[in-house]
Image (cartoon, rainbow, N blue to C red; front, side, top):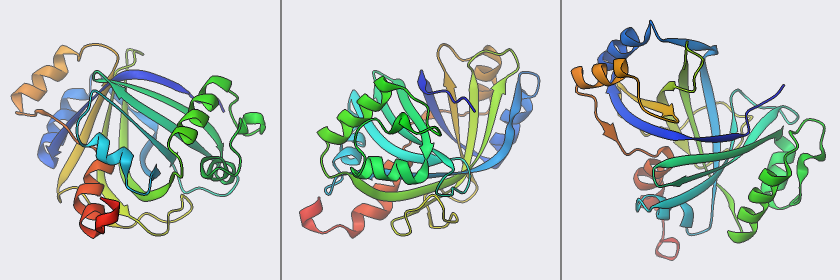
Length: 245
């Protein structure tokens, strides 16, 4: 199966009540449709340094930030494909590079067991430039290791026009620092207030007029929200000792 490996877009985030979500869904009906996967559980393992350099830099809201994660769109098995994703944000634009490969090889690569071009495997998309970018990231931030498991339920909608306008709704966002495996079931501490939904608008240009209307009518405003950043501030940071701050 072919996967998209390169993304360049704006990602705008909004915190909604369930009632606001229903209003937005109603406005979306003529223009958007649910993707073929319906409601899915997304699992992520985020990587960071011993002193959480990446997430601490990110929550300072710099002009440029980057992070590395391994993601699965279903419960993984050792040979099932997962994504190694390098995500960067500069001047409000998100750039994402990713490679699909078996979970076992993904974990070996990111942990340093297999550092150079794992994409010779038949299950992996070969893209030398992306693998080199990830290799450089791994070498620049030494001793990266898995720090947190984040899972959430997602509904993703695509434009009926066939353009790149996309809307996702995430809820039941759970965080934990043990059992860091994409083969595990989702469980952990909620980091989103009960009854709230995180909506993301992903696009390369402007927001359609019909969407701006419903956002305005329902008093829905753009916010800054990072799942990993929120997990760090509310769950991880309070448990840290002085030598890791």
